[in-house]
Length: 173
Image: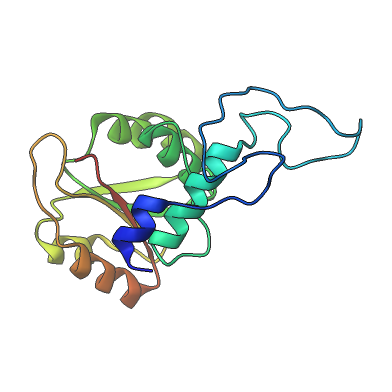
C-alpha cells in the first residue's frame, strides 16, 4: 500500500471488543475490568487507550518503524525522551529552538546532570565542533521556532551516525 493510502485509511482494527470497524475516537477514561487483579491492555486512558494505540501503530507504519509513541504535546514528548538519559550525558541543541525546550534543558534537566551545548545548527560544522565524548544526541528544530532557521536534517543525521548519536528533530511547523 502506498504511503498516501496508508495515511488516509489508517489502521483497521479487528478487535471487536474495542472497535467494530476501523479506528475510532475512544474518549473513555477507564475501561471495564474483565477480571479483578488481572492486567489487561486497556484499563485507564492515561496508561493506554485504543485511539492512541491506533495512532502509534499508524505512525510506526508510516515511518517504517517498529514502534510509534503519541504524546499530548511536544513538551510531553521532549520531557519523556530526556528522562531516559543519565547524569553526565551531553546533547547538542540548535541555538534557535522553542523556548520551552530551551528552559527545560537549562533550568530542569541541568539539575539532574544533563549537559547541553547550544549552537547555530544551520552550519553543520558547528554541530560537529560541539560534540564531546559524552554526547548522546543532537537535537534540532527545523524550521526553527521562532526565527524559521533551516537545518539540514540529512546532514545532521550523517554526523550523528558518524559519532553513534541519536538525532532528535522537533518539527513545530
